[in-house]
Image 1 (tube, rainbow, N blue to C red):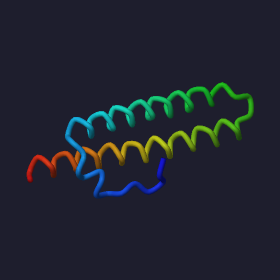
Image 2 (image 1 turned 90 degrees about the vertical axis):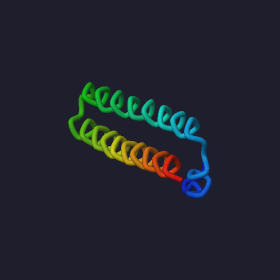
Image 3 (image 1 turned 180 degrees about the horizontal axis):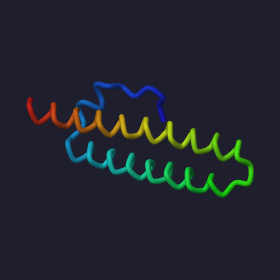
Length: 79
């Protein structure tokens, strides 16, 4: 999986493919939520904070990606 996907490839995706990608990202967001909650069960507060912070950062990045996908889809509809 490439770390920096080609933006042109994303902009040429079909609207249904973009929704599929969005669904996958929402599933990843759910995993972040699960990691956050599981970290609360750790006995070490420092470890809990680290894992919850990482899960929060990942969730924020996922939400940004979802927003960008919707923007790409909207741009495709306008063209």
